Amino acid sequence: MKKAFITGITGQDGSYLAEFLLKKGYKVFGLTRRTSTQNFARIKHIVHDPNLKLISGDLIDQHSLTFALNDVKPDEIYNLAAQSFVQASWEQPVLTGEFTGIGVTRVLEAMRLVCPNAKFYQASSSEMFGKVRQTPQTEDTPFYPRSPYGVAKVYGHWITVNYRESYDMFAVSGILFNHESPRRGLEFVTRKIANAVARVKLGKQTHVELGNLDSKRDWGYAKDYVEAMWLMLQQDEPDDYVIATGETHSVREFLQLACKAAGIDDWKSIYKHNPLFDRPAEVDLLMGDPTKAKEKLGWKPSISFEELVKIMVEAELELEKKSEN
Ligand code: NDP
Ligand code: GDR
Image (cartoon, rainbow, N blue to C red):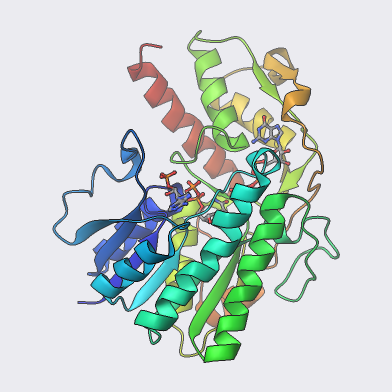
């Protein structure tokens, strides 16, 4: 039985990846950090699976990572844990650097000492392209991050490349563009909008307060993207890949389509601008070119932008109908 070790298993991607690997017959080990209240909402349906084991540890604690990997001796390591919310990275830039940047080195160091022949996946991000130097963005587009989060991810990206080149380790970096799902955190714009329009539809609130509606993102479906992570580790040679849909849409378009999916006629009637949600430095436009992933991994997205919006709004309508608040 192959063994996979996932950091960030309680997050959106970690939960989908764990499901995916369990279905493939893996034994899955997930790193969880100590929190005062358990945060297993996304994995509650698999937490009792005999092939899933949770191990306590934290990206900030080198020993916990070394001990965890020593216990497991995994074949594959997926480093998905991070402080992943761009806006929060201006409020907590040092913590973001510790988790999202140096945390990658800690996992790589533990792997180098304990299981150097494992395969390592780093969750890199389109935020590294930031103030984009070319469109669409490819594996060769230079980075220009625009937030402490983006800067930390550039560090994580290059330290992964560096361990591959310094120690001949199988370490790859997936440059993933935004991917969403009903399991997205409520603070991210897609889930925030999907949830708000559902609540407006059900008469639970009247408005949604947002920041910049003009920014454009290449939005895909999270379930498709975790498959790409796995495919990268099944290759003979380690390499980095852009994972994206190749389309870009504005936040305004997302809001318009979400209102339509919920049966709200006039999106402007429920929208309010709140400068609190504007960012000190914005990433205006992201659009990835997934050609390399298509050709070498045989990967392609299965869900369109319109379908994604619909999936998210329908999930929120279901959820909000059941909840009393
Ligand atoms: P989430 O924010 O949903 O999940 C983050 C995970 O990291 C959670 O499980 C969280 O645990 C864990 N974590 C945070 N800090 C620590 C720490 N110090 N030690 C151990 N675990 C920690 O992110 P996503 O699932 O959306 O993203 C997964 C990864 O992919 C992240 O690295 C993100 O930056 C990156 N990424 C995401 C994209 C996207 O569009 N979703 C696009 C490109 C990259 P807890 O539950 O305890 O908070
Ligand atoms: P992003 O996602 O920063 O792209 O990072 P987010 O959904 O937070 O923002 C997308 C765009 O929407 C604009 N926006 C708002 N954003 C939020 N969160 N809340 C608002 O009210 C709002 N109004 C407008 C933002 O300014 C931005 O332009 C995500 C994360 O998952 C990262 O971890 C990941 O690396 C990247 O995607 C790729």
